[in-house]
Image (cartoon, rainbow, N blue to C red; front, side, top):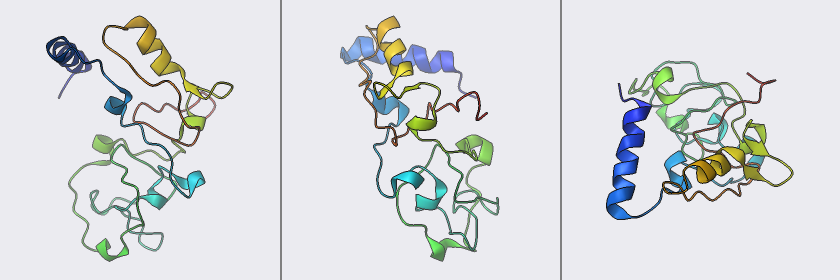
Length: 153
């Protein structure tokens, strides 16, 4: 299993070599697409097999509903034709499958007054030599660092 410490050390090494700071794409930040109220949820993922099937093409027969999300979200229309052809390529734990709204507006790091990510701000301030993260985010965007607000956990 890869450890966060190893990932950070590798990132620092790469930044030192290339003299290029890390951008927010390392968190797979995505600006929203329509329908925005379902963006980043399985209902708008091309790997989901739809509400009649409730599976994901890469999670085998695991029950996956439209209000769930994971780190491998891929925007698009659900692929109804993949029902019955699912392959258990990953486990729900490996992809971070959760049953909650994962957009920025639902994240504890989101500042709704400024529409900025406080995690990105903190990383920029504490590690300016490593990070150059665009702190401005769309309330309906998302990234893989999304953490539920304390009242949603």
